[in-house]
Length: 352
Image (cartoon, rainbow, N blue to C red; front, side, top):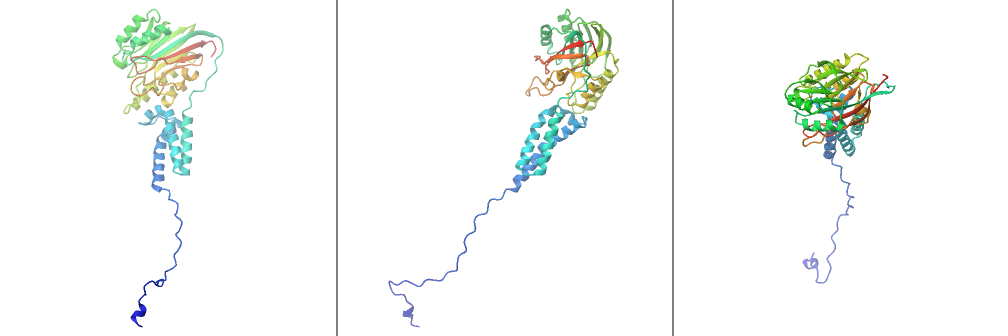
């Protein structure tokens, strides 16, 4: 072929080069849900649920267990918050089984937080006497002045004072001699001292063996014998949970040993809430009623009343036999102490 024939003349269009047919582009696939995020949410939910589940199980099994469970039981009502967050995270992770477990944990924690009271016998008959009780921890005697002012204002017939050293005891006796002339005490320094002051004459004085003073005595009120017992066992700190249980058990034995026809008021700093089995055993053995529970105030916190945290647990109680009916319960502040006081108005009724 002549080379000139292959040369394109000016102004002419070269022949088109054949091309392969094109395939239409596939539509973009939706982004995949990141599995690592789901896994992280599931792990976070499991961690949040583990503590409420374990603590609620202790409550359901009526056991305080070992450290850290006695300490965590003080937070039981508040553990519904991490349980609820765990449920939300389990749902966000789309783990049905985990979400079902979270529902069970949240329900169990909320159920365990319901107020506790033993089986009660309904009292009957007219009221024989009105008794006002104050239970207060004055924190190494620092709130003695505040307690004197409170007692003068409230005018109780019975005053249970924990952590009252000899100087505190002398100050109370001097300031309140006209109001509460009778007393039984454990005279010791620091937190070991305790005083029980009474408007009624006292007899049968005794002391429950304990690290901190737990004195008791018997009074006659409107012709009835009423046993008075101050409570102040050791707190359940790590390393002394066994001692805490032992001292609450001694208090329980003291309650159980009283005559069945004798009225009883046990009050003070129990270092235990209604969520602790050791505390409930004291109430159950004598069919005692918590004055705060009877007046709808069983979740009113009394400790810690000073420091960075607001009060979150009720560890100060007034427990009574069923013939002593609580009409009102209040928790006034006590400047100088890390506890709120408990003021309970009780009606001593004729029937049991």
